[in-house]
Image 1 (cartoon, one colour):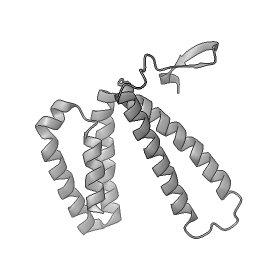
Image 2 (cartoon, one colour):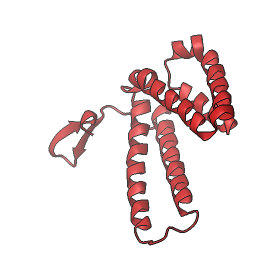
Image 3 (cartoon, one colour):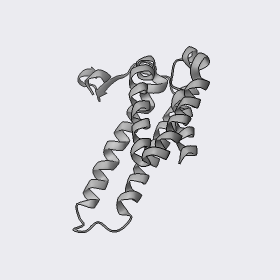
Image 4 (spheres, helix red, strand yellow):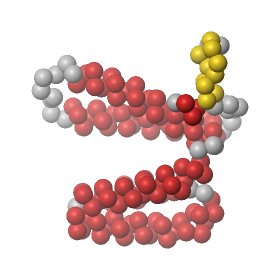
Length: 154
C-alpha cells in the first residue's frame, strides 16, 4: 500500500508550485513516507486515512490556489468531475435495482468510476498540454441560448 500511496503523492506534487517542489519536494516526499509508515504501524487504515486527509487539505490550501486559473489543470478537473457525476448516477441507478447488492459489485463499480475519471483527466490533460486544443475561455454557453456563465457558477 505504501508504494501506491507514494506514487500517487509524487503525482500530486507535480501540481504544486515549481519553486516549492524545487526547494522542499524531496523533504515533502520523505516526510509523507515516514508519516505513512508510522500511521500504518500504529493505526493501520485509520492512520493512513489521516495522513491522506492532511495531504488533501494541504493540496487544497497550497496547490489548488496555484493551479485554479490554469486551463491545463482546470479543464481536466472539470472533465473528470462531470465524468464522476455521470458515472456515479448511472452506478447508483444500477444499484437501486438490487434488493441485495451482489458481492464485489460495490468495489468493482467504484474502481470503474475511478479508472474512467482518471483516464478522462489524463486524456484531457494531454490534449490541452500538447496544444491540440487551445482553451481561450472557460465560459459555458448552451448553443448560443442566453448568456454564458463562468466556471465559478458551476
